[in-house]
Amino acid sequence: MFRQALTKIPSRGLAAPASSRAFTTTLRAMAEGDTGAPSNTGGQGDAFRRREKASEDYAIREREKEKLVELRKKIHEQKDHLQKLSDHIDELTKEQGGEKN
Image (cartoon, rainbow, N blue to C red; front, side, top):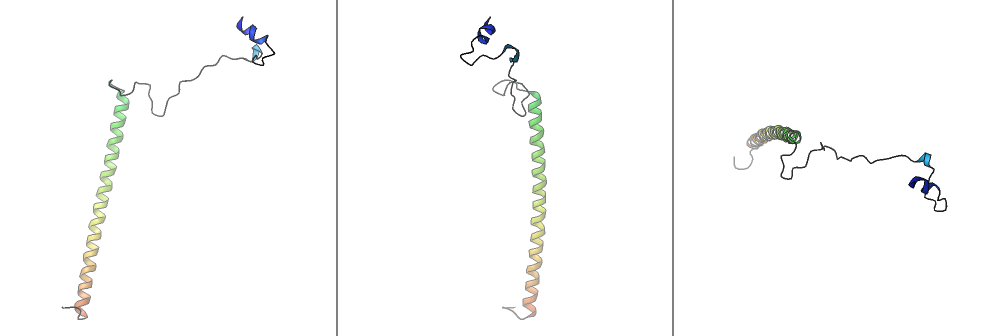
């Protein structure tokens, strides 16, 4: 009855032919990473989400450890290089009769 009432009111411009109407619903929008479990607001939370976060945290820590090892290696190499340069400078100044041999 309601559909018929809307289709018979041409003066308002709101009515559409009954054949063109479709039943529509909206989909539930979920953000990236949502699994549908309640958020961690006091409840147990989602075990998968906790496990995934722990795995990501572990991977990040491992990458940071590798970067630190590489940086320490580079620092050691730079110190060795600076020591060689310092020794070379000392050798050159002695050969040339430099300052206060």
